[in-house]
Picture 1 (tube, rainbow, N blue to C red):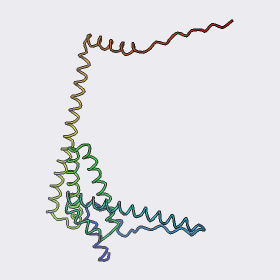
Picture 2 (picture 1 turned 30 degrees about the vertical axis):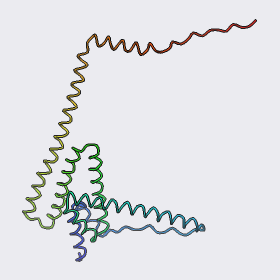
Picture 3 (picture 1 turned 180 degrees about the vertical axis):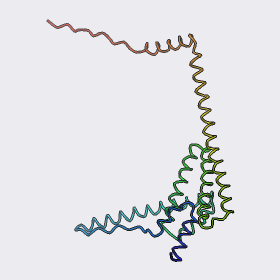
Picture 4 (picture 1 turned 135 degrees about the vertical axis):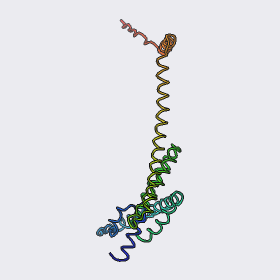
Length: 224
């Protein structure tokens, strides 16, 4: 392996967001589609080219927005990962984009969850931070395999277990609340008295009393 390839492999290993599996794609390059052969309708081709260019510009703008948001997310919640992504940007653009895509999915998942369940979102975010640090430390461990890093990873694994336990505790607490409400509703159904039944019956009769009865049909006499 050449020095450049070795440096590229190390940059990939340092990226906890990408993961070790991206080592297999170090030398893979994307192939652009070959342009179609020309046809007689040149004006339509120019129009199509302009449309493609416009759409490409929109796509590139969206990529830039996603990239900035992903970097902001990493800088806030795992600054070391953001620094490594900057290195990966220069080392391998394709793997950098893969890392940004994965990070963007994680960011969007946390943000969507926070809109409807802030308590659970906070726990999910904490779990993500621990997982991200574990991935990063494991990538480094494959290169050094020193006891100090191993001990650090084991401590992080304890934190991950605790994060998952907190999520389960939250689910159990909410399930208990739902069960308590169901028990209350069941008790109310059992305590239904004859008086309540009579009141319900009267309500039903009034609801149908207002409906107009169909008028009887009258036959018209034939004129003699």
